[in-house]
Length: 353
Image 1 (cartoon, rainbow, N blue to C red):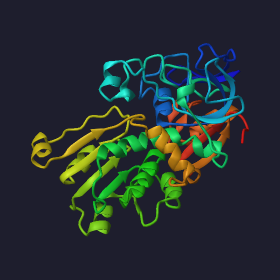
Image 2: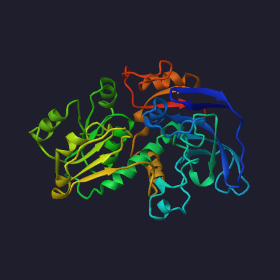
Image 3: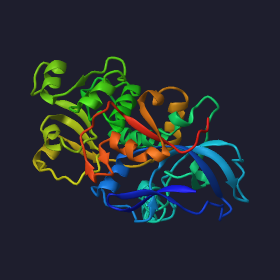
Image 4: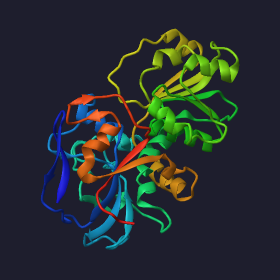
C-alpha cells in the first residue's frame, strides 16, 4: 500500500509499504477515505515542531471503512464507516491516573502521525476503542474534523465559561480559529476574530457564525466593538502564538488567555498582574474528558457546520499541492505566503461515501 512517510525535515514522500493486518485481538484495520492536514503536520515537515520519529507515516484527522477486525472485536464489522480517535492513553501511568491522559507517558510509539504510523496512507491500524461508527447521514469529509474539534472542546472546557456576556476574541482564522469561534458561539459567547492574511480573511468572512465579526487589526477591533482601543477583554483564544504579550496587557480582571499554538516563541509576562488581576494563562492540546465523542455528536447533529470549513480536497498523489495551499512548499523546502482562500484542507485516499 501507499503511505506518506516523514523521513526528516522537508523530506516527505509517498512510499510503498506492506499492507496492514490485525495483530492483537482488539485490532481493526481501516481503509482510509480522507485525512485532514493539521498544523502539527506542517510543523513536523518544516522542523518547527520537532517531535516526529523519522520513518513515521504522517496524518491523524481521518475517517474510513473497516476492512479487517481482530478476534475479540464485537462493536464493528467489515464495511462499517468510522472516524478514528488518534489520541492514545494507557490508563495506568501517572498522567492518566491524575486526569491528564492527553499527556500519557506511553505516547512515544503510540501517537498517530508522530511516533506511530498515521493516516496519510491507504490503511490505518486502529484499536476497537478508538473508533466511532458514523451515522448514515454524516459524510466522511465532515467527520474527519472530529479530531480537531475535539481538541477545540478540550480548550473550551479549560476556559470554564460561566457567563455569556463576556468580551471574547479568537486570534487566527485558520481551521482551529474557526472551530474555536463556532464552539464559543455554541456556548452562547459572541466572539470576534482577528486575521491579517487576505486568503484566510476571504474564506472566513463567508463562514462566520451569525453576528460574529472579523477584523484585520486588533486595535480597530477593540474600537469598533467596545469604543476604545484600550478596552479590556475577558477571554482570548490565540491560535497563532504571536499575540501573548499584546493580549495579556488587554485582559480585564479575571481575564483568560488560552494558547493553542505549537510555536517556539517566548513571551515576557508581568507576574504581579497575574496575581493582582486574577489572570489565567492556559495551554491546551489533544482530546480530553470525552471530547472526541462530544465533537462527533456536534458534527452529527449539525451544531458545528464542519463541511462549511472544508475549503479544498486533494487526491493523494497531489499531496505537495495540498500542503502548498497552506503555505508549506515541500518541493522548495520553504514556507511561503498563502495565495488561495482556504481553511481545512483534506487529502482523499479513497472514494468512499
